[in-house]
Image 1: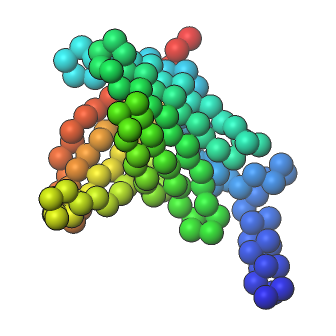
Image 2: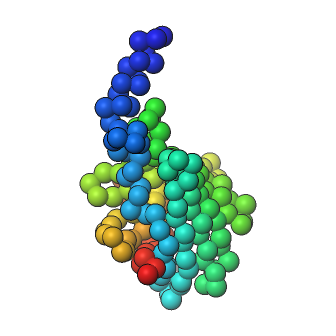
Length: 161
């Protein structure tokens, strides 16, 4: 047992910077900040993303008003045990969603499986076109086990000055 704990600790140290924070745990830093949001049909909202708990957790506060009455928050963390990002979303409609994914090829993709009427589907969020002051986000669904995806909602993020 000691050798397993030592090995995991050694791996974490090798993938850490001088502050001890793993480099992978910084993959979502592009999202941190204050954002103005826009989507099709003239929709507008805001999103406030910050780091908390020794900079290891990403906390989101989304507000779609006045365009829509959706408000919600998410908590995201990188798990060294799974080498994946995990996000939990809750909202003012009583929604609860949990996602798992990773940052790869310049995109952050978090995905979940769900069942409606006995039929399995997949949902995912994709952050892409990422730059310092803007990015795009898609909410997508697949009913064929990920072979094809339909975009249900696209949001453009512009960093507040």
